Image (cartoon, rainbow, N blue to C red):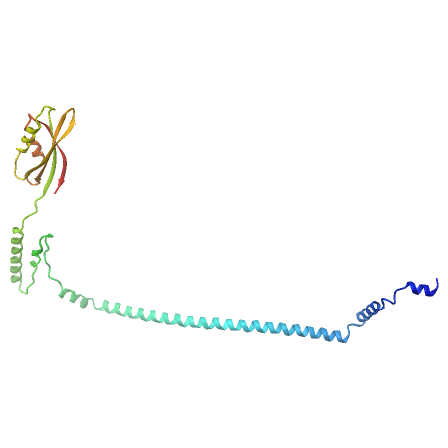
Length: 256
């Protein structure tokens, strides 16, 4: 093969720029970077350092401002707490002074109470409003005169109490009067029961209540004074009519 033919098959000349670039990189690696590359690298490093310093300075400035604000807030809160403590201390000191003064003079504090002792009055029941003007414990410098005046007032009060009507205790009683059988005359039985009369007894309404097998009992109401009439006396008096009455029971008992 001739030399011309060999050159025709080779393409090295067409890729010459690639070989030049490879040769340049080889020499740069062997001899170190070029001056232009060094300058570029230094400028890039300096720019990065400036940016980092700027960020650090900004963060430091923000942190200092926040720290200053917090310190001012703490100082203000501390001053407020100091004022509150001083006010509480002053109030406590005043209270201790007053307590010490009262403890040193107990007798002088008790004298006004003794001089201002109110006059005692006797209060009766709810209906004794006119007895409020009776003073049972009047005071006088002379013992004999005071005793005489108190006795007169006691007598006047006793006289007024004696004139007032006393409350009479009464009760309402419901009696069940049972006959012997269904042939007992219930009208006659009721008539006999109502013939029982005594001081403090007042008969009321009555009715017949069926018991069973045609037998009816008499249910009668009465009002009695507790001090004069009792249920035992009533039962005893009614059962005396033995021809009509078999038994007597108390169905209801209520205080009036």
